[in-house]
Each structure stands twice: as structure tokens, then as C-alpha cells.
Amino acid sequence: MQIVLIRHGIAEDRDGFAESGREDALRPLTRGGRKKMRRASRGIARLVPDISVLGTSPLLRAVQTGKIVARQYESLEPVQVPQLLPRKSLPSLLTWVSSQKRDATIALVGHEPHLSTFAGWLLTGLQESFIDLKKGAAVLLELPDEVKPGHARLLWALRSSHLRKIGK
Image (tube, rainbow, N blue to C red; front, side):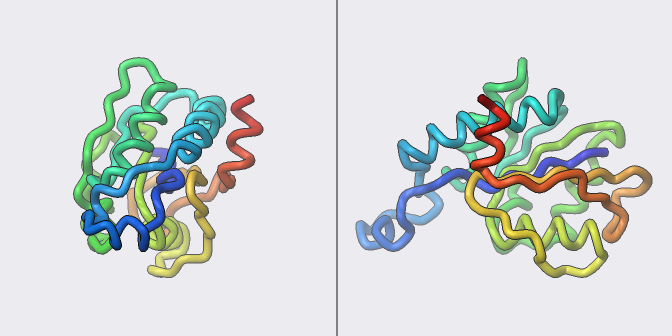
């Protein structure tokens, strides 16, 4: 199994959005964030030519990012995965991942520090973050045997700017 972890693109400012009385779950990507994510998603598609399942956090900015990524793949429709919400437990996300086909390539769009902590857990078995996932960045992990913490291998970790260059 391969897992692509993608942090959502650049979203509206959290504080400014909150001051306007709107709920954070509805905070969208900025115009520039959408543009950068479109270019980064082309890079992801070059590096990962086939994705079986694309799961997103239910928060709007992750859903929008997932839709942008999905456009790079034929017949790929994002599904909302509540376990990708920022404060959900890592074991619940692992249970969802484990329910997917063993030969699948799964893309997950979510938030920090949830995604990088999940990556660290899969790589080392410790629920610690040591990968810095900036907005629009992605990592590719491979789980050759079991879908189990400490069993993954890191194939690559790239910032959005690197993905955009690859996607040119």
C-alpha cells in the first residue's frame, strides 16, 4: 500500500475569518491557494500516476484541495473521511486506512499537525511529528507488509514549491 499525505492549500486567514463570525470549518482556500494547489497537484500526478482512493477531511479547505487533486486523475471522486479532522485519533485514521485494499494507493488531504504526526507514527511507531508539512506539501509513504505503525517507508517528502516545479 502507498499513502500520499497532502496538507490542504493556502486558506483564508484564520483570525480574520473568525472575526467575521464565520465557522472555521467553512474557511475556504484563497484564490492564490487554489492556483498554487492546481500546479502542485500536477506534480503529485506526475509522481503518483494512479490513486485508488482520495480521502479528505470534511473541512472546506481540505475538500476544495481534494477536488483540485482529483481533477488530475480520471474518474477519481474524493470522499470525506471524518477521521481526518484535526483532533481525531490516529488509531481511528489507521483503522480507516486499513479497511482499504492492500494494493491501493491512497491519498489523504488533511491538516497539521495531524498529518505529520500520522506520518511519524507510521514511520517510527511513535506518535510524534518530525516532518514539516507546509500548506500544499505532500509525502509518499509505502507500507510493504502490514498497515501498522512503525512499518512504513518514506519515499519522498516535498514542499508545494517543489511539486509545482515538477508539475510544469
